[in-house]
Image (cartoon, rainbow over all chains, first blue to last red; front, top):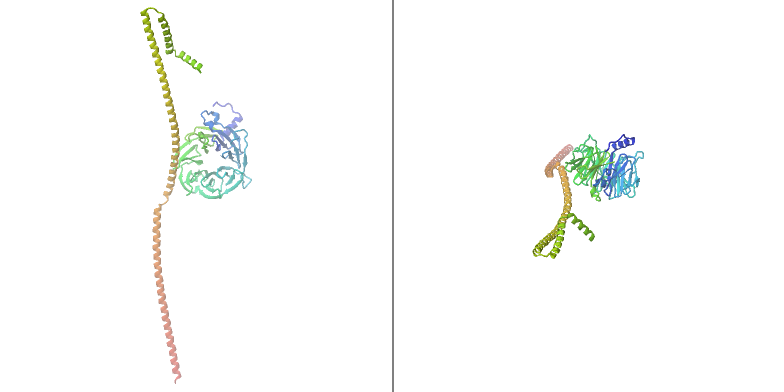
Length: 337
Length: 203
């Protein structure tokens, strides 16, 4: 890298922006070759994974192919259907067409705002969840409700109430089908989509094995495997057996975890430390892979069948970099905004 | 095609410059010496020249034979290489399949390990709860005690009933006796009163 000369104001401004950037969400394209990342300035950057992973990758392949301003506030969550990229942040959810997203001046396909009770403040949307069987999207966030939106008509069908504080994360339990939501009030609630009722409530902070009152009771991350659920945040990262609502394994991680997911026979989690952790179901730490950000907020596994050569784990958090782990064991390189 | 191979042949011959040039020269020399021999006169020179020509001829035949053998050998070497090449291709394909098979096995093994760990986790939780047999035994014992106690209660109640009935009988008999005694007294009083009244009326 050549030494910078005297920096002008624009460069200083850019450098400061990069320094204070936080990447909140990631999403993989349906073809598996592109990664979208959303940051706290409301920008979405599209990176080409196939170019960055190919054998003739240069420094420019680690920069985004295109960056555009998507929202006014931060982009807290993103998800992809088989043709659209859905992004949500400050109270609105917007859809972008993956086929057009690489062209300059891409406009959103549609934008929707769920019906909020008060029109004064617009609560943020913290989590998006796709329910493919019903072709519906579930949004949850600051107004403590889960809104279901039908993707074909764009209408908001139901609002599930029950949480007493804002919702952090959602997960889908495929077999039932039920939705799990975890929030600031410390409870994980299971909702049945067909009857729109709360089926089960697990108050994590009330269980001695996992509660850590010094961190609070908020549930920052949820993942489910139909019979099992892992959740973490203020309380310790714990594996629960859903049918009996008992905590079975507590993972010995002091830092609150912000994202967790099941992968094959492992549980991958990331949170306040700079590492992505690989746990076995028995509670043993199998691997701890350091990343380039001081704290991680989201993990994304590219398991799209169309691009098996791009099967990587990407992690992003409190920095402008997205780390790419090619065989899950070490950090191969980082993409940067 | 013919022109190309000719060019290549010429280029190769020029490059090699060893045996090829030697052979060519030998054949030319042979032709020249044959012509000289035909034109020569004397017997001994002719004989020695004849011998020399024969030896040159045999040398040419020898080198020709050698080249043919080398050509043969090259052909067979090529065939051998082809065979080895095909074998290696087959084994590469086989290795690919084995890799795919092993990957599937790894996935299967990971699933098995996951199931085992889930089982272990649940088993740990279950161990915390008391054993079912013991609880059943305790339940049985408690049930028996309950039965026993209810039997005792029944027998005590029966006894109580019996005593009550007997007391009732006793009391009612006493009452009857009292009544009879009172009746008798009254009767005797009435009789006395009657007799005294009769005595008063007589004188």
